[in-house]
Image (tube, rainbow, N blue to C red; front, side, top):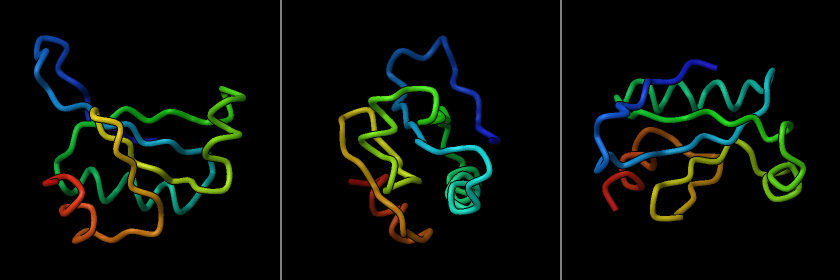
Length: 86
């Protein structure tokens, strides 16, 4: 899963997480939308954590913001920008 690197020196950076699973074509589309928007994010595979798998298993891909807000699939570039700007 491609992800834009987070700058470890920037404590004020707004961090986004993309919950996904490997081989999920929708997750790949979501990662591509984030990358095209120039958004740094950390990709977390929900299969590596039972709690995350239970929480997001039927909802992925999910983008989670640093403030706890979540954007659930399906979403497009416009909806992503609205979420990022909120």
